[in-house]
Length: 410
Image (cartoon, rainbow, N blue to C red; front, side):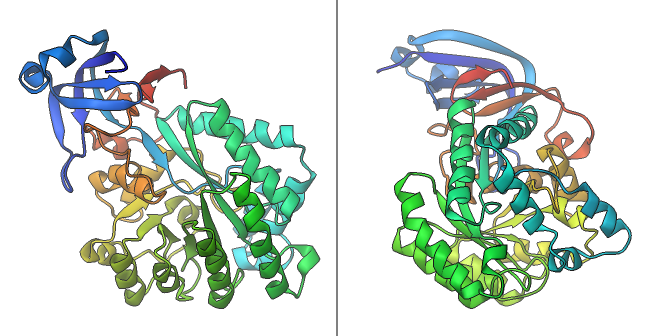
């Protein structure tokens, strides 16, 4: 036995241990060894379920004060690294311009690309660092960060390296996603196929540098066609990289079916998802990532087919989709609330969406539940019941965060 154990007692555990229900354990406790949970259960069962030799290695105890304790939260879809902001476009939309109108006029993603390219490495890191800290204060312990605002090898590398630096310098797990297939940059105007050739050509070098955990694309009328997206996915598959997809946000392009053919980790947005897409995702084990922040911010009216996804047994995750153009959200707790009020998720579905299912959307099976063998990432909340996590908004009840078995400041 290589490490001493820590006992975290006097907690009301929300284990999410089964496929349904909260898995509530009153008067619960957790035993952790390093970054892993060794045991979780009712404190009265500790002596019966944990061998004496193991109990003897408990070197420290923490009283959690009767707090509600859940797994650490997972934000599985963000665009956290970028320069500038787009408040002016928000104002234009309020005057009647559509997201597509702004994009076709040279705004949208392209304006953020220009600001990102102009920003220094330190400026990119400083802004992303502050955003990450804000999310962390609400119990987020695992974060996905996409590139896609560089759209050139040098700048995609800078964005991915900035995301890696966040994970190295903060008590936080960061997964990086290559999203060069986000928009066609100005230097490739009128030549989208040439740009797809270029971004597929950049991928091997970025992957060799250890900067890429997954590959994503924006399959949409103002993005990339299914045929172009397929080429991106084939380049990822050749390197053994998993794929994800921005799918069916503004129209049904059959992206979810295509992504399922490649065993995609997730399809995200999905407001226009078809029954064929739903069944393909279910067969492939692909997670549906719902993004209520973008739905709200763009004042969309087409709801994702939550009832159909539920009936089909497709796991549903929630995320902030933090980005400067369509979801400048920095509260994962607010996404739980919106997931319930706008998309009609249950509070339990919403919590699973930012824990176990959010982790699955990143290909991670070692977190999201409070059970033996999982990572010791958990959050103590000043709440009576887990349904309150989706009930309150504008309040942060996070009292304490444990990351990898150690208390963290943020």
